[in-house]
Amino acid sequence: MRSKRTTSLDGKSRDARFAEVTGAISVRPGKEGRLRDRNILLIDDVMTSGATLAACAVVCHSAQCREIFVTVLARVAKEA
Image (cartoon, rainbow, N blue to C red; front, side, top):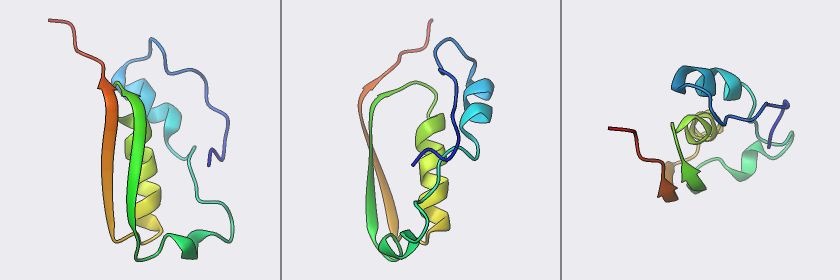
């Protein structure tokens, strides 16, 4: 869950995106046990920098998930 409000990541640099979501994702209080020793699949519609997925993965790792898998439906292409 989002534990703090974040501004839109649109137009932000990679570093700004990571800074914006750091500490913004958490497990609902009292629900940590539901993640422990479980495999988790994170799904994102569009991955730009990976900041949101990274923040979610950190939280899952802290909750002692067994394995964390990621899938995305689309990836933003970098300009050539």
